[in-house]
Amino acid sequence: MKKIFFLLAFFLFSISFNTSYAYKVGLLMPTQNETRWYNDGFVLEQKMKNAGFQAELFFAGDADVALQQRQITRVINEGCNALVIGSIDGAALTEVLKEAKQKNIKVISYDRLITGTDAVSYYATFDNAKVGELQGRFLIGRLKPYASDDVKYIELFYGSIDDNNARYFFNGAMKYLQPHLDSGKFVIRSKQIDPKVIQTPAWSTQEAAKRMSSLIEQYNYRPSGERLDAVLAPADCIALGIVSALKREGFTDSNMPVITGQDASPEGLELVKSGALGMTILKNPDDLSSVVVEMVEAIAEGKEPQINDTTTYDNGVYVVPSYLCEPKIVTKKNMKDLIKNL
Ligand code: BGC
Image (tube, rainbow, N blue to C red; front, side):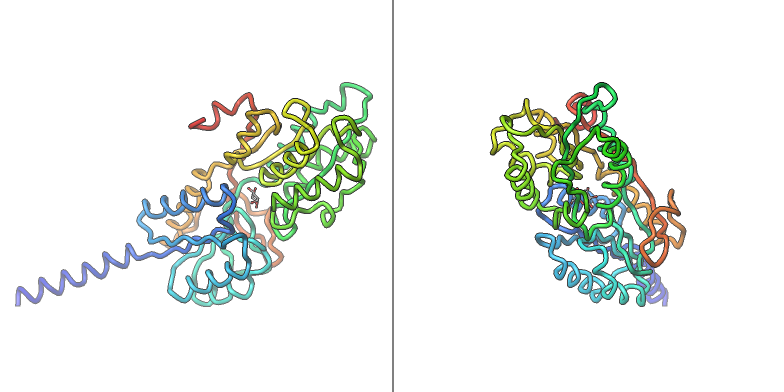
């Protein structure tokens, strides 16, 4: 009798032990082809595991929307408690997430806002407007429109139009650039300013290089041709394409227009170091993944996660409670202090 009681107690103990450690979280990253997402995926997976969660990590190939939809459906069908999703097309997950909502699986939007659904519970990201503001302010600091009567020539690049973040980056930068465009101190020779025209589909480096090459052809932006003082690039992946197109036309690290970036990717940091890129932005994956792990911990314990923004991110259905981390500007001057292992 004693033995049976002992076995029963052991059985019950192991069930409760297992369930407390079987909290499953699906981690879905948008692409394996950009270091930003590759790093984030593995940092997040490790932190989840360290916190005792069962985590499964997926990359959606080369930003393949249909593949990401299938991956989400698969994780939901296999059974999970929470999903952390870095979307490709923020508006393309409405259908697949209906199932998550029905099964009471909590969804955290990672870095990029998932729109058009109430299946998203929380949003963990960086202050996206601030990213754009840092880029715009940096260009003002380098072009110094207040210092002389000189006109400065600039061109603008926009991120992928299906990514909600792209709008925040652009509007943040334009807050600083627009007044100088209005006053005529800054001139866009191409006059291209409409997001639909200046967008970079899928944040593709090749697409950015292609558009920059065509601007060079049309407006003769060459060291011996028409002046180009600056290019607003929302992210390193886009800046890389711009720099390579300009280098093909004879620009060097020392006569390169001022170009912005974002992500502090290894490739971006190389360019900041060499002087080809004026700045990039550090979005520390440790910061964002810690926020996400804390969110999942709170959800698992039936508590409300800590959030610091309840007004900014309307996804078309409701304002998603968000936690915004702090992005930091990286220039040649501060990069050694800011980035370890340089
Ligand atoms: C992210 C950026 C990234 C870009 C391209 C955006 O949604 O916030 O950090 O550079 O996507 O991947």
